[in-house]
Image (cartoon, rainbow over all chains, first blue to last red; front, side):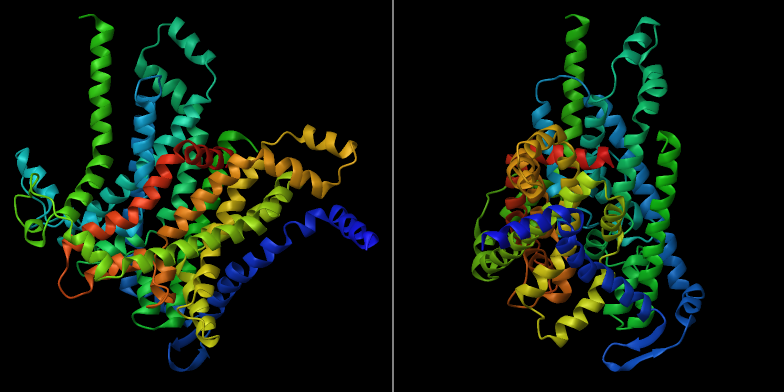
Length: 297
Length: 271
C-alpha cells in the first residue's frame, strides 16, 4: 500500500508538466475545441434545424455570404461599433487615468465606483439604458432639453442607433480601462519625469513625450483584451435594439446568431460564425505584431 | 486663497464630474424600481416621488425570482469550484514549465465567439435529454470560467518566488507537495480574486442560459430579459428586477474591490 502511494507520487513528480494540465486541457478540448471543429464542418453543409439531415455543399455558404447584402451590412455595423467604442474607451481611459494619477482623498471611493459598471450584469444594465434612451420618456432626452439642445431619437433612428449603443459600451467599459491604465502609470519609472521637470517641460509636453510612449504597451494590451469581448458584443445590442431599427445596428455576430437560432439555418449560420472567429483572430494577431514591435520580442 | 487650494478645489470638481455617470445609472435603476408603473412613463421624468416597494414584492411573489437567484447561484458556484479544481494545477504547470503552447490554447478559448458553442451543445444536450438541467448549464459555463481562472492564476503563480519551492525540494519535499504546501497558500489572494471574477462572469452570462435553460434552471439574466416579452413592457418591474440581480455582484465588487483591480491589472499588464 505504501509502495503504491510512493509510486503515484513519483509518477506525478516525473510527469508533472503532463499530468497537471491534463484535466483542464481535456475539459477545454471537449467544451471548446470540439464545437469549433463542429462549426467548421457545418459551415460546408446546408442544413435547416429540424428538417432532414445536413447535406455537404462545399464552399457554397461562403460564396453566398459574399453576395449577401445583410452580411456586408453586419460587417459595416461591426466595424463602426467596434472602432468607435474601442478608440473612445482607450482615449478616455488614458485621459481619466492621467487625471486620477496622484495621491488624493477619495481615490479609494473612485476606484470602488469604477469597478461597478464592469461587474454589473450586462442584460440588466442594458434594459435600464433602454429606458433611459427612450425618445418619449427617456431621461437622456430630458437632460439634452435641459441644456437647451434638441432631443434625439437615439435608438429609434438608424442614423443615431450605433452611436447610442457605443455610448452604453463606453459607459460600461471605460472605468475598467481607467483602472488598468492607472495601475500601469503607477509602475512607470520616476526619473524621466524628474528630468523633464528640471528641463522645464510643461504638462502637455510631459504627457505627449513621456507618458504616452511609456504607457503604450499597456494601452495595446488593454486594447487587445477589450477587443476580445467588444468584437463579440452581444448582450447590450441584443437587449437594447435586437439589431434594429431594421438592420441598422445588426452586427455580423448578431446576424450569425439570428441565422442559426431565429431562421434555423444552421449551415449558413455556422459559416457566419467562422467568419467572425477569423476576424477576431486576425485582429489579435495584428495587435500582437504591433506589441512585439513596440516592446521587442 | 492661494493657488494650490484653487487647484485642489478644481480637481475635486473634476472628480465629481467623472464619477457622476456610473453613479447616475445605478441610482436611476433603483429609482425606476421604486416608482409605480404610471410614474415611470411620466415626462418630464420624476426625480422626487413617494417610493413604493410594490415592484420588489411582485418580482419575488409573482415572478418567482428567489428560484432564479438560487439557480444562478448554484451554477456560478459549481462552475467556479470545478474550474479552480482542475484549473489551478494547469495554471501552476504552465507558469512553472513555461508551457507557452498551452497558454496559447487558453487564448483561443477566450477568442472564440460564444455563439459558436450554442449549436453543437444544443444538439448534444438534446440528444442526451439534458436541456434545462444544471449539468448542461454548468458544463457550458466552464467555457467562460475555466480559461479565465487559468489565465489569471498563471500571472499569480509566476509571482510566487521560485526560491521558496527550490528550498523545499532540497529539504526533501516532492514537487506535488510544493504545489499544495507552498504555491497554493502563497497565492491565496490570487485564488480568491480569480474565484470572484469567475463567479461574476458566470452570474452575468446570458447567451448560454438563453438557449440551454428552461423553466427549471432559468438564470437571472434571462429572467430579467423576459420582463420585456410579456407583451407590454413592465418598466417598473425591470427596474426592481435589475436592482435585485445587480445587487449581489455589486456587494461582491465592493468588498473585493482591491482584489479585483489587482487581478484585472495583473492579467492585463502581464499580457
